[in-house]
Length: 114
Image (cartoon, helix red, strand yellow):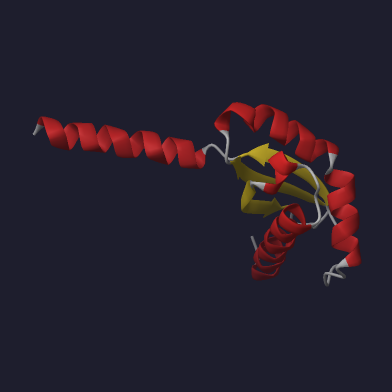
């Protein structure tokens, strides 16, 4: 991934986080954390990885985010990000934090056994 694509992905993550926190009216979506944006090399598609505060509502929240992606994309257009075209958004639940917690617990169990 080029430096330009990385920089734009970081800008998108920051702006999407801001939109979710300030502009979206749904209370479940307000507590979503954008962890990473994977931007395609031609800048036309963006996978937005995010985590949810309440694990019980994660499937519903991701579904609501994907339903609201048109609104979020329009808000990105209004913010005049330095891109010719705002990419198509796709929201995906980021399982890496759960995986990291699982590995951490396993390591703690190993150390307790020693």
